[in-house]
Length: 295
Image (cartoon, rainbow, N blue to C red; front, side, top):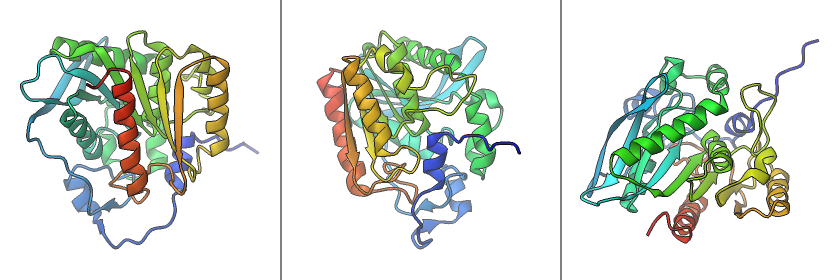
């Protein structure tokens, strides 16, 4: 009998969220028209929408070794040399929630850029309707390619007047894992914030080491924000990561939210938990200010 493949912890967390009522959710057609992802399921009707007053927004074209990577940016209008914050997306592609996060960061004074590093798949991930069809695509992304794409995004931001001496990264779900991976790799990064990023990976030949295995390699301080009811990243894993980082004498802090599932910051999904999301956003700002990314 063939053994079932192990699922990535973010996939488990996404598919094992508490039941919800469909009252208060957009229809699939309305959600798609608003720019949200279909594979995440029903979209909340009262999603957070950040306007563009005082900020400039647009699409980016980022040069990478094998072509041109799309992205989305937001930056404060008329501000010279703003700090740069990379936004590492979930598995669902570059959709409206991720774009809105970049606008929220721009309102804080950052030049925020979300690179669409799954572009090589040749399909719009936001249009995929089922997580089982989505995961093989995103799981095929090699870590070395991901890290190169993030470096290319930093170089693009610098070419556009961003201050990459004040470089941060924030990521959600699979993007939270990317925060840990980039913090272990980049010598330029000043700080990272990982929202419910995977800590232990299933076997995958294109992912040489999980964040847990990279604990001793961390080069930048990371804040980990996790939900105690995350079905894919249980508290015992978070505690193990804390211990590994402590033993390696690396700078990191964690905050776990009781009753919060995976995706508690994703205001468009049923997993959203307002109190935890708002507190985590404040914790993120404080972390970036502590390490001089934000003023």
